Length: 198
Ligand code: ITT
Image 1 (cartoon, protein in one colour):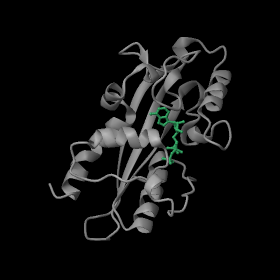
Image 2 (tube, rainbow, N blue to C red; image 1 turned 90 degrees about the vertical axis):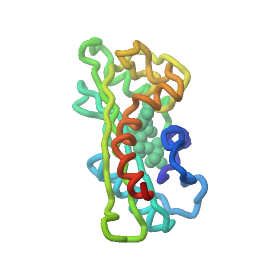
Image 3 (spheres, rainbow, N blue to C red; image 1 turned 45 degrees about the vertical axis):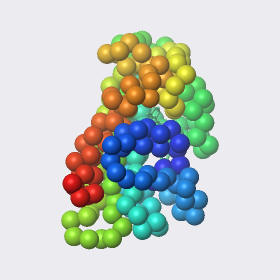
């Protein structure tokens, strides 16, 4: 898994639990160089990360690029989600900036979606093994104060209206059933199963 985010590793490992594969992440491979995420889309960044990590490790690599698109902010923070408040991946600062940007915006106009692109890259270059990408989204509403202790990133501000709870108020099992990452991965699962030989 081409990620350094331990929360993503936990979620993806949970989602892949029934496949007979050993899952490593970049935490196991500190030698792999950092990939610059400079694409305009989640898909472009996921392809870049998966391809670079497959080439560096000579292992099949799965990369996730994901983030939050807020309608009242014209799709921001989007591909900048991890760095919205500046470099350093500080979830609290990102959430604080998002709340400030939406100050005074009424609940009906606080709609948002999480989007995730997952790319699978094969290191061998064997025929039919081109990079595959699948996407998933999840619709919600940005609250005006955080709720819940689970998850990561923007989860405490992201209300999932069907359940009346934020993503940070869901268990890992619940989030793993309905998140943008779960939806992207479930679209990728048939590709992965075929890739792994049925
Ligand atoms: P890697 O690039 O190493 O995978 P990262 O955290 O930098 O880790 P991204 O570039 O994909 O990952 O940025 C994703 C950001 O979008 C993440 O830091 C959160 O701020 C937000 N995000 C993505 N998925 C999320 C989720 O399920 N819940 C809450 N926030 C999420």
